[in-house]
Image (cartoon, rainbow, N blue to C red; front, side, top):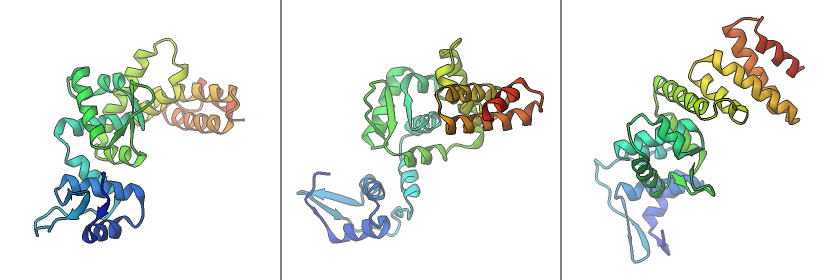
Length: 239
């Protein structure tokens, strides 16, 4: 913030909520700036007198982040929620492909710039990649989606990845399996998870292989029964 002094009332408010948590402090201060409850003047932060009808300061970190997301313009809210489905980091092209609104890349870039300016996203070494400032910010945005919205966006994401990597999904099988599973399509999730598990076995990543293959087994048994070829292959990998 470029300040050298913090007023006692502002310090007491932040300290009483954040209890020394650096991320919580960051989010509370941003929240107070956005609500106009603190003033920065002459390198000093001062808490302004709050009115009786002033928006209450949330007691939890998730509450503060959620409050800040709710304060965004509608388009930016839709963008951050859709981005949350893609994970902690994501590509702009993939987000554009699954975005609920009919927008172009220029408009999407503007929305991502807004999220960056508001501290939800940080710069990545890859110019086409964006990263949530913290996993909790991603989780807060994701939790604002309804179950139906999550399923629809996970399905769109899986189909977009499938199309982009048609004929060679080896590098994205784990992601495809995850998104199809979260979309409620186990018959498509299981093969990709099993394939990802086999790749992990070949790379001697035993723990990853066990997790992937076990999940594939559970999904496939639920959907097809015990005679599935994917189950046979997964069982050979788990043993």
